[in-house]
Image 1 (cartoon, rainbow, N blue to C red):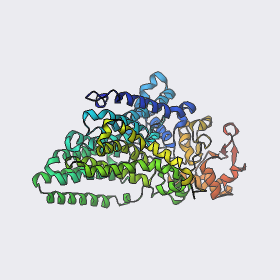
Image 2: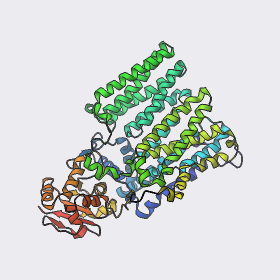
Image 3: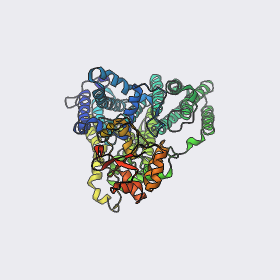
Length: 601
């Protein structure tokens, strides 16, 4: 790692050592992101997804099967999760490594800190390496310095590297950066082309958030093969073989053999296996035709035929996967839960509710796209693919961020090295002094985000009454410590708010019905329908579901919506201090704002 960062020529005395800067920046970010964990304890910094990941890792360590991704304590008898063992495995290995010396609790706490911190260091190194890909040795120190600093200011992405962040977003960001590092050098290195294919398949096996970016980058490779033919034949074959081979290998490692073709549209399964392995094989076929018949027209026809066959097979085999990934979520749950999830908000909703954040999320990658387009025009034809594949990949990420806010994290961190590269490409004099660093810092996400907040009074005009709810996890009953007292009760089935579910699973041996996952239609609907029903109807529903405990959290978004939907429903009456005869208040584990009831049998 350090060897790639150290310049091959001595830089001027005004230039900082990039390896030293990377280490210092990494340490500063780790400490800054770790302050909440220091104050509240790392377990209470876990998001709902982090807590569920911890539960999944514990189940794996306790003997649950590698291929069995069912969460048996969520909506009993269980829900099959759409997550991947690729993230579970290193977390479980770290816990096993630390446990003999520290014990279970401390080993988990240390893992919660170490894992995202290591990934942050890798991400910083990868962005610096991307930016230096095509630069001269003498230029690299300042390019690396500028890139590291801009990456450190990519605020939308940093949240995924905080202490406790163990879901899968940070892993996907790192894999995408590795993919970018390799694919922009595809023309000049078959080895990197093959590695790019492997990283693409690995990213898709972790989750599908990066699918649009990987798809357009792969299409760019096909376009390069069509345009240049024999010149890039070896690299194109390496990329196709890496993609197809890795996808097939990962399928054997992660999926039961009888489920390889299963129509799973929200995770790695039959549809993604068809697209990735089939896409790699199709690229190899086009390369084979290109080696036999070298004309541009022949390559274009072969690519069109292979693409049509692949997409035809996909649409015929998995027509349901064309719909939105949230199409299966019940309309009641869309309005009750999904519409208020911040990370799934489109840009239009963010603009309506918190316009001061628009610049911080969207301005930097948009500016970088402009620099990339200008670089495509001005760069030499023989190196134009580097800018083309970078531009289309960033454009895809940006498009995802407009649809869902969570896409802004990847768009901003990928834009960091591309922005520095664009400044260098358009203004080479900036490399000779500190102008490059100043220019990069001036347009960083943190700077642009600060501008957005500075002009907030003007942007806020007309937004009265629109806010994004951001409740304190502690008072909204989402932290592990808030759920810990429930462990004193006999294990049972708990009807609780949606966002409280993962914390209860992590802190106790109880089962829960509701949890913030789109596959959990049944359990979430059961909670909403039961707690909005009249007490008499709710009594029958609780008995039918064999519920042992009911929890109300007066400061949770769920409770507010339940009261709004049904002012005379069970949740509303319990929130007002009602005492139905079929529920018994358990004072020992209740506290202000959080009330626990035992269902009388």
